[in-house]
Length: 122
Image (cartoon, rainbow, N blue to C red; front, top):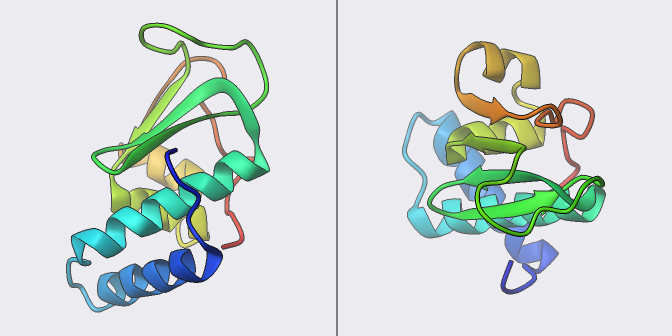
């Protein structure tokens, strides 16, 4: 991640996204981008490492979880989802198992599981 997102800025964006989603509206792109990156930043702080890549296109990706370091090509452990799913998982609005079972999370690799790391505490 390029720059560290300030806690107040991240929480403000996250509140805006959750408010829009609760109202059945699409959140502003800038708020979504900041909220997603902020939550990815929190995940990186909680579980630093390089063995699992978490992707939330088009807003961000981060390598987390201790284990074998990955440096080139497609990582062996990849988790990918859309922004709404990531916000729901990271904030505890949806359990990991439910999102995986519903096909909203695409996970590959033996270590591609965030169940024990979520929800985060933004």
